[in-house]
Amino acid sequence: MNKRQRIKKNEDFQKVFKKGKSFANRQFVVYCMKKDQQLEFRIGLSVSKKVGNAVTRVQVKRYLRQVFLELKDEVRPDMDYVIIARNQAAKLDFHETKKSLEHVLKIAKVLKKK
Image 1 (tube, one colour):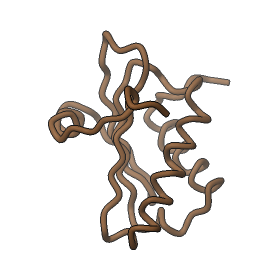
Image 2: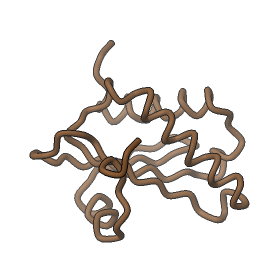
Image 3: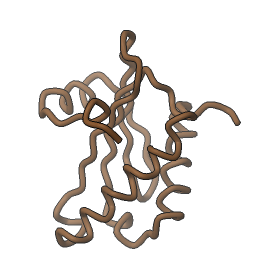
């Protein structure tokens, strides 16, 4: 995942929160916002200190980035995504994280059909 595909600035996060739509399950909240002139998707990750210590939070972020890397051909490219990890996300391994995030993205209708 390269730097062009990451949302880093607070103002970009706030735009997605205000103008985007949210979808959730027990582990993740995903905000999606359509951007017309965008060629590849961008993601922003938010993992609160309530989720766990620094090691746990970094691990959750790595899992999320890897899931998006594996799903990059199936995810709509003209969108910005902000993923907020909830407390239960810390207890998941990679495969459970992928399954849970795919579930939320299917609810959001941003995954292409296989």
